[in-house]
Image (tube, rainbow, N blue to C red; front, top):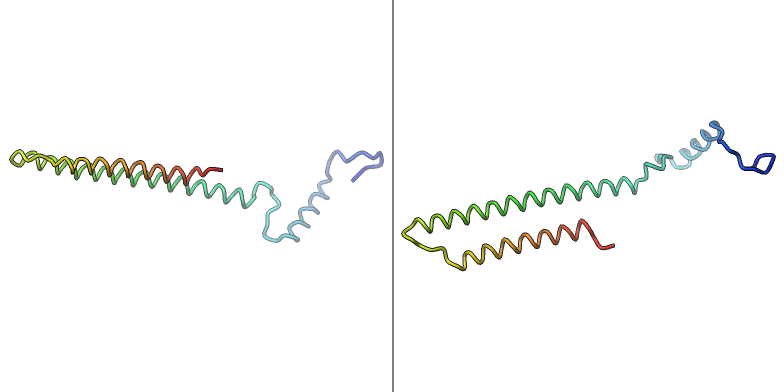
Length: 119
């Protein structure tokens, strides 16, 4: 839209802007003309919030599971030691340590790959 001198206008008439917004809302009912209300951006923000909630919940659950496993194993060790010098079998200790390491590494790997996919 050029003016008399061939130069583009330097300002937009507020009435013209209102007409354009009204025409947009008639053409696309239910859609906002605000560019900051992009549904893809809102979906992305919700996705990030869900990932944060998932990660925090998973880490809390992992911590609780490891704490329970440690308490049960510690109780088993104490019970074995105080019952006539019975020793804890080495295989029990190895299994406990191995399961703990596998659980931590596996969960951390899975969560990290899900939250931060390779682009």
